[in-house]
Amino acid sequence: MDWETLYCPNGRCEHYGKPFKTGWLARNGSSRGEPQARCRACGSTVTLRYGTAYYGLEAEPVQFETALRALAEGNSLRATARIIGVDKDTVCAWLDRGARQCRAVILALWRNLPVTECQLDELWSFIHTKQENLPGAKEYLDTYGDAWVWLAFAPVWRLVVGFVIGHHDQAQADRLVEQVAWVTDDTIPFFTSDQWPAYPRALLKIYGEWYCPPRRGTRGPHPKPRRRLRADLLYAQVIKHRTGGRVTAISTAVVFGDPAAVAARLTHSPVSQTINTSFVERANLTQRQQNRRLARRTNGFSKDLSWFEKQLWLSLAYYHLVLPHDSLRHPLPVPEPTRGSGSPRRWRPTTPAMAAGLTDHVWTTEELLSYRVSPLYWEECPNLEKLFPGWPEVHHGN
Image 1: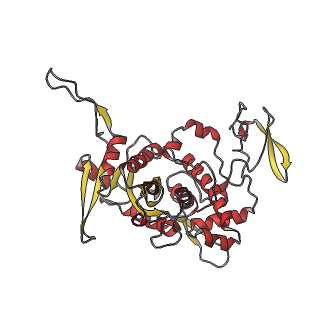
Image 2: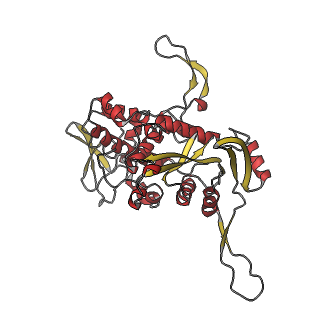
Image 3: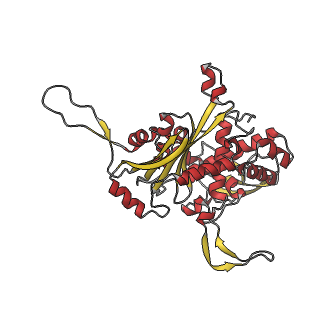
């Protein structure tokens, strides 16, 4: 935790949200053994932990960090509680605290990304009860049953640029593509997906442009405005042909854009020269391995949608910022010695966030949990709650 990003907590102060480095906060002793600062304008005091996941934490930070690492590595709530030696409800409270922090960090860092390629896919899970085992009452269908995790994946950096948890319908596909448009810059990525029909409609809705068709003749009403493709929107599909439930053949098709433009884009691709969804499917496998709630045969499934989302925010932040990716590592010009008698380090560990230029080093769990986001950022981005809904309250369940 550092002083530079600490800010005045008083919402009525004219310097609310402004960081310590602007000079409006001054160190002012300590409170209960914790360093604190004082606002020069309104006199409000704020401790060094304010605005981080450690603020108000009664447990030892080491326990808190170890529990979140265990959850991010694929342990269930009860297994984590047994490892740490605390109650399951305590781990639930820590997960809620850590997920809110991870969500804030990702939404603050994932902006104006120059994504050139984006693969779209979805993976199945369920909440509380599988869809086939639900009763026919309608009130159960909105909260329980099948839950699909929609992922937008940048294969060049191994970076998840958007995700949605919900039904397998058009509304979720629209929100996923809208998230991609929000986190990327003005350049439209080259999209690939499977043959699910919701994707081309979502891309046309988000990236299409309005135009008014010319009127034919002089009689009758004028044509209504329509959406049409932009010239720089390229989209291809991977079509899997199945026989008896098994994939027997795979073909590809260019849906939006000129096939020659798609071929030219693939020629300069740093990861693959073919139309495929291999990278996002591998990311799906990674999430199933590191997220107990996504395993196909498990008793660690989610009982509530909000806890499913919290676990996914934690897993993604840990995967992007803390966990080095073997396929992204770079050779060191000179091998570095390691502790003990081990062989010299020949590779520089690299995380997806480092590959995307969001940070210059591998984060520790403490750095992730202590990264401070100014409240002014949320005021500048009013659409965040619509695109990435948060959670209004803490309830101790799983």
